[in-house]
Length: 369
Image 1 (cartoon, rainbow, N blue to C red):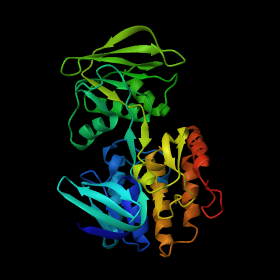
Image 2 (image 1 turned 135 degrees about the vertical axis):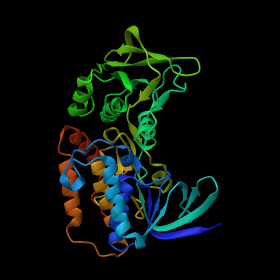
Image 3 (image 1 turned 90 degrees about the vertical axis):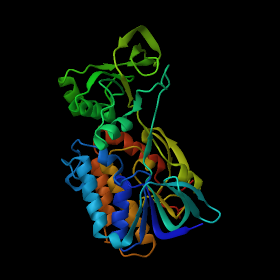
Image 4 (image 1 turned 90 degrees about the horizontal axis):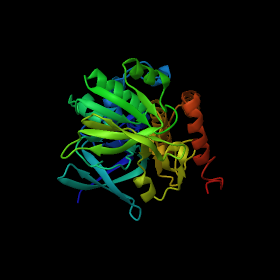
């Protein structure tokens, strides 16, 4: 069986992975990027809205344009970057430090790397309700892929479940595509996303029902409607059910970090609610307890893509430096300063609490337990 080798393996070609690959390759390291999708860019290619944040992280630029910027940066150091699209890393075997990978459904091979950056992103969360397996129930990421990548609308009238940033942004994008949004229901007593996103959909006449959730979907072979209900402070259904006429139910109730490879590598893991799940403990260089593994982006905790790009820069810089490649003095401090700036708001305070839980001063000082 064929075995490929590289100095730095980057698993995931999204915001964090591309940033890590660009940073490491520009330092002179040989980098291999593995991406399970048919194209690089991850969630960025689906994002038609303009980013917030800072100038360094392309504030005011639409997500798919940021993907193009990162890909151009990769192209500028293409002699050091090997890219495998439509390829999935299926496992890591610590006894011989080998990854298994599958390209499409035809080619199975091994990969060996001196250092690995896990930028595998996140998985969409789902919620249980009656008939949630009917055609017409989508995750928000699937809806974005259909519309913004393939130009296909999922239906005519949508019930959105979740009023975080993703639910609000996808609702607006649906309306831009000519799809009616019947309502947005949110179990929490307040909107989880940025007010500017909520204001846009409200101005377009979409009700945002707080303290509500879906109870059951209606339909024989496809979705024809849904019943929603109010929730009490214990998130238990209360009051009468209300019927919503829709042919699509879009679920946007959050994400969970994708960390299986990190667990297989023996990295010390920790469940951190502020980071939305199980993540690897790491130091300021994004290095985990396994000195050959680094983490970045949503795989290290759910956050905005702007922060994912900076974490990718830190991981790429650190992985290259660990192999002896020269890196610019003070660059790590600069990147951390940018991260702190991005995390300065109300939402960032929660992220910072989570980071404090998993961050260690250094794996050599005995404080990594």
